[in-house]
Length: 405
Image (tube, rainbow, N blue to C red; front, side, top):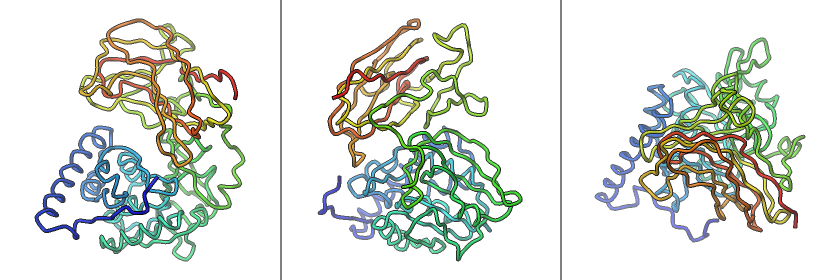
């Protein structure tokens, strides 16, 4: 994905006038990111918002992606890893309820960004970066930017950092199949852990509180994180089958904690499950998106394993209903259902869509036969207004195998 001849720039290497202009531009983009993508999505913790405004995310991504640093998106950082989207970082940090006296263990894949956001909020941050090359780069970046209370270790995140335990809080930004016992052991009694747990593509974000040596869990929302590395990751009991891709909870009948969020769908914006038996084309629930501001995010995502060597075609279908649907400011911002294919490096190969829908219409079935690129190893299904306006209702989202190669 990355050229070995990429030149790495930082502000202090630029002429003073250029550096000042660049710093001001990044500051403005951070402020805009916080207002539009973080506050608007429900993060309210004042100190967390200040940390997001002040942490230079562009310093934690490869040079070629710095122009994208303040978009609310996961970006590749090498070695098949990504830096978490800003909203996810802010949301997890808020749910951790950071206190000035906290000693926090953070486990990440290698960017160092989550540790940097935590730095001004807590007493000490002990971060384990699980990918060696990335972890060493993160350590250099954190040191250069003078995050003096952040301590970096490269290693297996499942093992924790026992010599500095116990920790008041633990935050994990990559997903194990279940909570590793060493992390339970290293959490203080009464302490909290924010962690995504589950199968490779089906995870929930939990708040765990340690009481009498055991964890009590609260489900926060569905999510999608890259897996950990190490022995425990290799010993996963449940693995996805890339030769049998399917949508999970495509009828939106399963919800989290009996609330408006659907199970198995993550990164939702301006979306909620409607429980309306007589109006749903199947079952009793459907997913509804509503937006009146052109360009504003309104979506739901789901990832899946998909091997293009085994599958050449898929049938993509959905029940859809629209009310006053209109486009956003750019041609790409249209109400739609989209599937995007990724190769083994998690680089985008291609996308195909159902839509782009407009106007007002009652429930109808939309379907399309898709040709799967040979290099595909993963895919993400994206639903919603996607920057468009109006109300969009979706149900019975399905992927069906047409034939094997």
